[in-house]
Image (tube, rainbow, N blue to C red):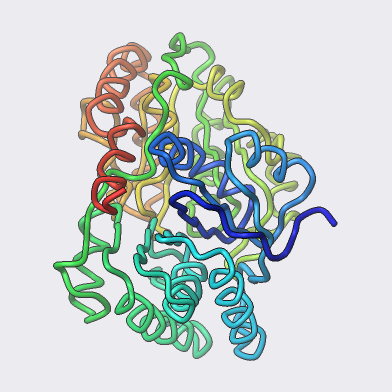
Length: 384
């Protein structure tokens, strides 16, 4: 077997973290896992899709990988109830003192499972509201149903959490307004954060002017608007580059392969796929994320800030927290291609802004998005 389904409980203080993917658990929570281990805790890392590589990576962190059954997307009440029962049994066997769950299904089902298993300290991290709370949620019966189910399930599960970490004030205000969680339980944190040592400042690039977007290929990430803006800008300045990084996604609002490949064939975009962002950030002049997804605070923007890249993003919740208008980047309204084109042309016509705004981006990253400070806040709030 790749992993033991039920792991023998450890003898020291123990902590469990539950995610919806082994990859995202490693990608977003590795520094937090290390920091908790450094405080004398044994850490279980629970996710549904460990393979040989991710199993070894978790072990190298000093944590124990535990494979669980949990679907990342979709609604299947029978399967979800079965998964809650299975997860409760695993947690009852492991007997952690504290559980932290992140992403919608782990927050809902993981928190409830931890309560059923008698875990005394239960915490939830909500890194953005996502598809269920996006601005398209009321357009169809299915979307309406998803929205109201998410509200009801969040309310049920968060009633069993001692504290709820949220990443921007809009999300916190919306959850309180909708009666999902009491405001006294909420602890705001500045996103996931970045390790400023492993994301050093990169040399600025202003020739050719190169725009970069890295995201899951969801419509609500502004992928279509980015491509349309690229088409307009390249018609005026053909030497300008537009790079799109990210893999196809099974989310209902995923952008199809045919559309992306058509943009590539037209010469509008370069699309290497789902790859390491670092070498591409080195080539980039400006980072762009025209999102209306209900982000927490996008980690991709935080990485761009740390790398010394100016940012163009939307004045949407979570995104606007990353830009001081005219200082380290530019904000545009959601779904406004003309405004996006205007922001891009500002950099094309004034390439010196790549340098000055890039320096300001790094300063903002140091002030707000240092992962060590964010982790310190969370660990203190959890009493670890």
